[in-house]
Image 1 (cartoon, rainbow, N blue to C red):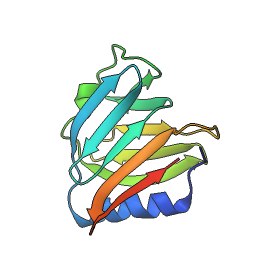
Image 2: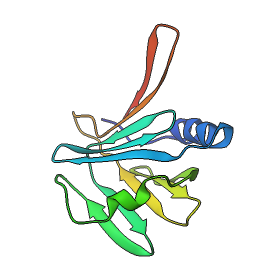
Image 3: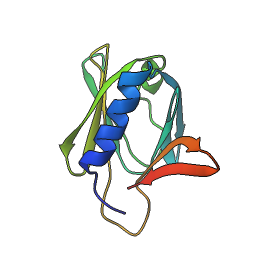
Image 4: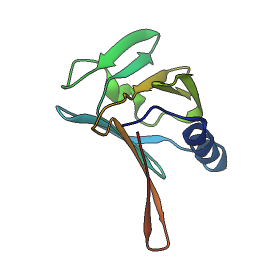
Length: 125
């Protein structure tokens, strides 16, 4: 779809600063990697790069042997743009993930936030 922008960074950092946002679930599948935080989730359909315990890992298009479960219960501290196509989330432990988006006709990343009234709140990249 589209590249990341500063608005999504601002929104994520608002969530990270209001209430603790722990990773509750990491779901790996051949079609995507889903990260469930306390109040929202991120569905990743492109690559996800991680630094876990100082070692690099990549998820792309299929489950792999990376220790993705080690991200469970980690506390998200900050989001930032590494590039227009890479959004970084750092955790209190020092681990981090880089979520990739691309300009294409398909959704690369979907952020699902809590509904407001009767409206679903999503950001699609």
